[in-house]
Length: 205
Image 1 (cartoon, rainbow, N blue to C red):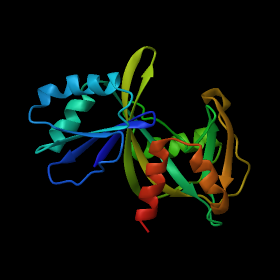
Image 2 (spheres, rainbow, N blue to C red):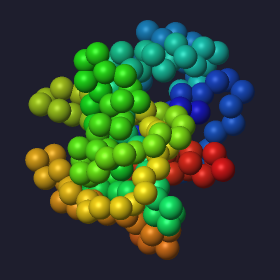
Image 3 (spheres, rainbow, N blue to C red):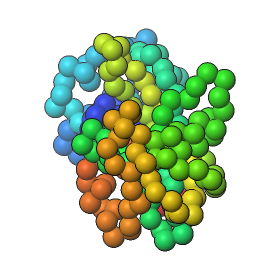
Image 4 (cartoon, one colour):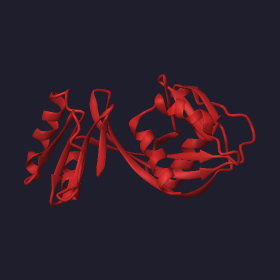
């Protein structure tokens, strides 16, 4: 199931045969006509008690596309970077731990954008890209416009040498290598999309 996050809530898109949670705060709706999607998104917006709205249908790709069409689209890319000690490169911005990422520029390859953003936000170079990891989706408001951000994530390596320099003009106040023993505390204070990236990385082992 694909999840589109709205802060800590989400709209999920699933096929007809996909088993989904029936926990408190979750609601399932069968979609037979994608023309209904804008009204369903509005219903989700207007009902904050819904933690997760799962839209199920025979054509889940069409449903996902219809949800995305309700917003302005933006593409971003970032990296889950590890060093030989097993530490993960994380940044601190807006009072939460995050992974380095940013907007894909016009004419830029997605993987190139991921490397550039990690380098710029953390002040490092000589990254090695191991593999494409996953995509995450979230909706946010920028300058009064609601944006649907698709972020492409890559698994990367770095030798861990040299000082890290947080990109303060991007509101990053810290960049550091986080040891495995300290990772759980950081993930307690991060975004749902970042937790998805780490889950995807664990499944890849």
